[in-house]
Length: 170
Image (cartoon, one colour):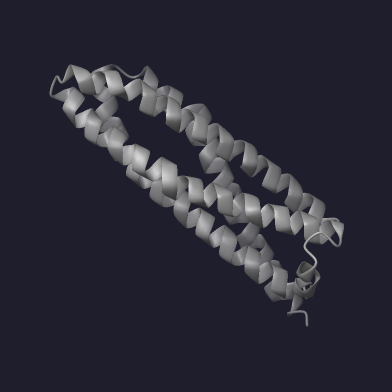
């Protein structure tokens, strides 16, 4: 059973807006923010990262949660949820199924890799600021890990956006 068209429009708008802010926020972080922070003098990186990183992670996770929640609502609002009983039985179901898997993969990556790596980076940053050489040597590997995971997330995110366009026109 389909929902009122106005409610469907509101849900879809919230879903698209949150998705753009989520994936766009990740792309901004990767292509603008990370290079800018790395271009700062070493003594300024720690304080800048300490201010940016926790807010950035919280923002990305909240946008992800709103996107996923409104995506689930959208499936039911369209009246097509029953089509997902055969995940690849139609182009729409396949696109939605792959989109859900991709969105959840990005969300899990943030919780399982980005968040703990960032916490570790912030802890090491304090030790670097105190002059600990071993901590300074560990930082490039952590930054490289974050950069790699961010690239994977953005690639998956762009793929999910494509899949949602496919679903919309299926």
